[in-house]
Length: 453
Image 1 (cartoon, rainbow, N blue to C red):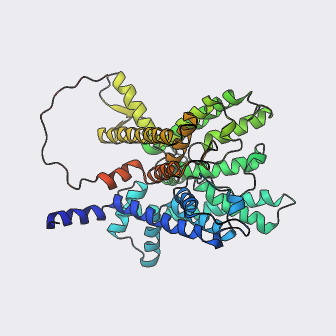
Image 2 (image 1 turned 180 degrees about the vertical axis):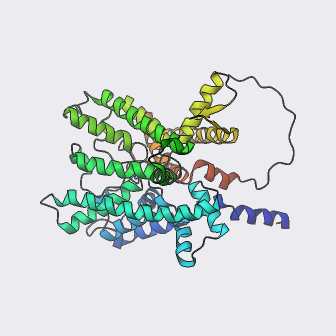
Image 3 (image 1 turned 90 degrees about the vertical axis):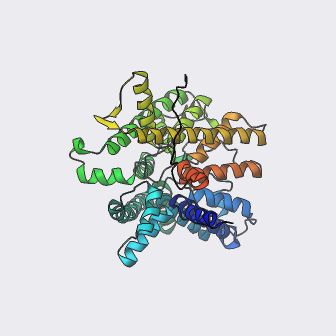
């Protein structure tokens, strides 16, 4: 290899995007190995193979929640502890957590550590980043403790639960909910709590809070009394989140109103609660109080759209993000109106941001579409809408399932593993790591018109 080639390889390997991808991959391999050990399995449970252990590790680190084994029945307390650590680190971000440790130990964050953490959470300003990383970890810990206490109180009210078991359930669900992971160690899941307003709202509050993005949370804390001073990012994130929550709730309620297999037999109040919870959880949380297996196809298609959009930027959730959706929709409207610029809330969106948003949408749709096509080749007997649902769930790091994941062929599970990984690190970051061009082109070509549309 030539010296120039070696230098290029070194530069490629040291790029923040490459290192973020490598760190996630290494952490997943470590978690998968730990889950494959007998100590991670409940007594009397047959050994869980390395394939299923690795799938679970990917699902936990990418905070997705897709499972191929029963979480409450298969994993021991040690196995659940491994899951909790992977969900927490996966939600916070490996480089973000490493940056925080550096701040605690040496009271500073180096440029390199800052670049890595910034690549992970989408913040480039090192001055802002150092303060943000510290505040993120403190905020996460405090929030998870509060949510864990609220959930523990609820489970402790049930006579069959000891205080110790209630605390165990509370901690597990708090970390899973805030990090939008979707794992539940409740036997039978959350289905029997479909009408429990307290538990549903606590869980929904946790994953909505984790999903609106840390910059938004901190800005609201500083300026909640003066909405006019909020940044464009905060206004857009809140507006799109509220619109998707409300729109999703109404549509799910209308579509499933008479479906006796889901909410058709419930009271009006429970129908509203269940529809709201499903609308909120579809944008990367992954919990469910009524199973997608029984939903109508129109609801599945709606959830697919919500899963692909996902949460907001710099959050614990996945998807293309709310701000990306807003920019692409507004840019399309502006183009149809022949506006000179794209504006939102009396602010102009830079062309560079429009290009990034469009690239992300194209990458996301291409990734999900290609994965669904490959899955259809591997599993020709499964309904395509179920395959599309599973692919969107994996890419959006949601974890909702139509029940086909466990029965997929090994190659089909591998497709979902890749989707979960790409969805967590981000298709742009992943693409940068794979297709990295270190230096921009120093030349250009002559322009020529092209007919489109």
